[in-house]
Length: 438
Image 1 (cartoon, helix red, strand yellow):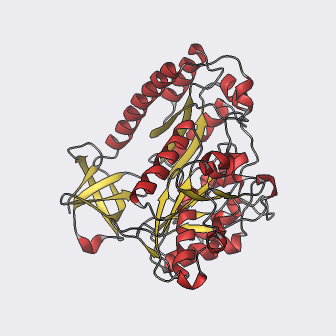
Image 2 (cartoon, helix red, strand yellow):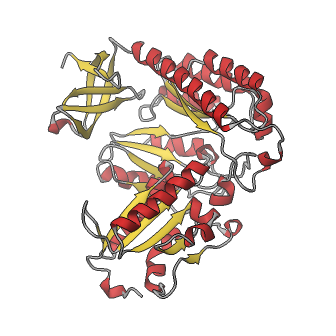
Image 3 (tube, one colour):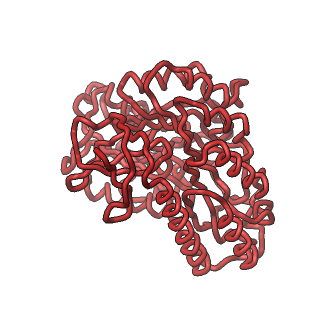
């Protein structure tokens, strides 16, 4: 059992998988431990405690989590191994059975790690603490501070949608959030720590306000009125919650960037119905057109899932043609993975693993084409770039308001500053545009 007085200088190692929300939550957990005397283990150091924050969106995610647990167990054989996150909430027994795991904490327990470490019985392996997700009511705020130039602020958690392919409601619980006032206070704190850009993130971000009688638009308006040099991005927002009013506001905003991430999931109305999504392709197309009419250079990223049960060859071709018609900048393509407890398992038609991969490859090629076209339209234009601390060879990179990746010779004094630059041609790897006229 860990003695509370011995937390001082205990070394802790973190490993986070999955979404930006997980990274924000790991950061919040790290601050809790740091306040109690823990120090983050450096590369090569043996940790006293390892904390793995897991994802469970697909079978591949589960597999990566198990790999991470085994790898950290080999690297830190004497450490107390703590596993939390979505995989831990959904399949705690499976994780507890993995050699080396000492503590499995569910969604509600992840922010009480210190308490469970203090009470840990070293004679027991794979100790599980998890309440039913239906009983989780509290919203736990968090903000990732790992990057000097981009912070991820958790504004919402949980989801009430219950799409037929998704386990998130079973792992994260009901939609909930803090008040606008408390959320803005966290944003101000991040700004005071040096944040120049904050990404608003959540499981269903646009559902913000449901548990406090407010709206996401209320939050956006208050954040936009802050008297600070700060950029905000909206990480992902359901198309049915992306109102024309919000699009119009962002188009005139000083703080909110012309950058949208909108989950489509399928370009076929029939498949959208099978998924129990809450919009049609017509609505989605209208949202893209509205954005581009107001902000012609806006970056639009789109999530798509291929190979779900019921997606015939004909429906996939239909979906591909629809996606091809959209004026978007990038696709995030996911292959369907069967998840226990989901309604989609009741659908008879199954797409083979081989065909899922083929469809994924097809859309990845389409995504590359869309991104190339979007970038090349920006060549010769001028924009504001927030330079990051990452350095590759003698170059540094940064992102414009509309999420164009730009490269220039490294200059330490520019890190975490915003500079107006002209966009030249591609770099050698075609991963960024070169800043010109410096």
